[in-house]
Length: 150
Image (tube, rainbow, N blue to C red; front, side, top):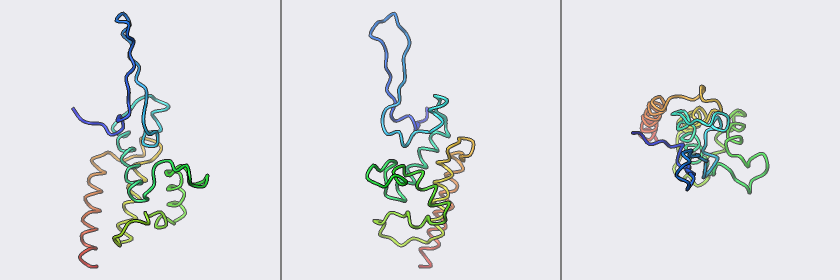
């Protein structure tokens, strides 16, 4: 049995009538972490976990929650804001201002790239979690090399 990141917010609703066997599963919790394809297919997959992990990476890198109600309209949905900033070539402006350590720009860009790949709107565009792990390990190696230089 494997834990699923994406199904953290499910609640099962069943009838108190023992003659009824149907159980309904409804999504509860923070929608920002939920695979957008779930709304269309009502199915969660391992790629749903990858999406949720991508949102978590974005949250760590930017210091923002998936939805920021106090931000201007074009920045309220953090994922859309991240995609736009990344595509405009201004990804470094998204780094959490509370991040105290100076990190190699190349390492940061690799982390943003990985996060964006994981949070792709279409499941087939997302890497497998094994690939994500391999990429994280490679980024870690790059980080350790840059830390020795600096």
